[in-house]
Length: 351
Image (cartoon, rainbow, N blue to C red; front, side):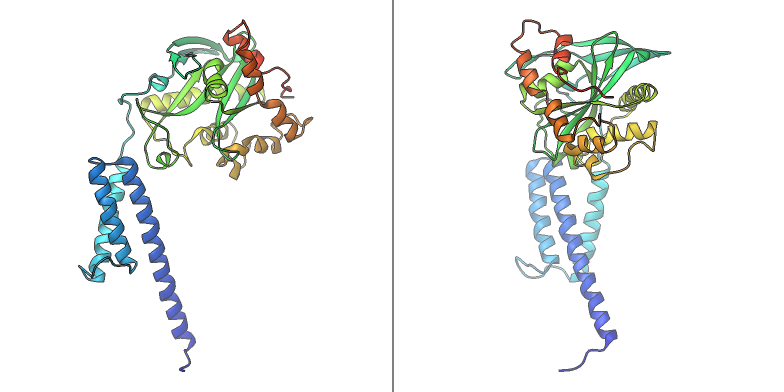
């Protein structure tokens, strides 16, 4: 057996690593492109699935798995793959979010407003009346808000696919009227269903919905039977007002230019983080729980944004609103104001 010199060994190791990196690139890029084609279906489902099959076979040949013999040389295969993948990137990143689709009625309207000092006139505030079968009566309304009358901020987490992932909403309490809740939603088209994988591949536009709590929260706790928690947050008055204004700025942005939802980077939790960072960059350190949004309450507790007189276990017990929301259905008083009061029964104060 011949001894291999250190130089030859390092060269062989480098070539091996290069081949491994290339194989990993082919695998990951092929998975990404096939999923993008599956979700987007350019030129129709038959064309897309045909391209997926051909691309898969071509990728396997690059990895040394052949269905038949070589058609082109290795160098030509690499050149074709590089050009084709570059074209796929151009196609994907040229997909533009739009404002003019046939929207689902739940997100058909966009929030707008006029501001005069501390008085905000909101337009297109959602106030749907939901029925047990999931149908609803459509109603959009105007509301006038006085920023000086904001008395509290609440973070609502709604769990729909296990403890790691939750939808995040933020509601504002007022001294002179019922609460108002904001939610970053996917802007679904009529007949379109949500797909977490589709959310990675420019499937949905973003929508900001301002709503009555008996709409956005009730539908999650009482209609969809999600596990919903309401956490009053410690926040100075100046930052409460600033956060409300940031929501208005976000409404301006989305009216001016449609934006894509992204399951990981542009979602209901990351947008709240970005808005609070815009108010005070020192407030929220980056943390994995901003991505695993189901653990957001624990993150807020560690930042002392929740009342520290209670443990996190106690907070989860007290903050869950489902039992109280179900009892609301049995009451004669079915007003929005009463719903907001019912879901806060027994809830600790922020301070």
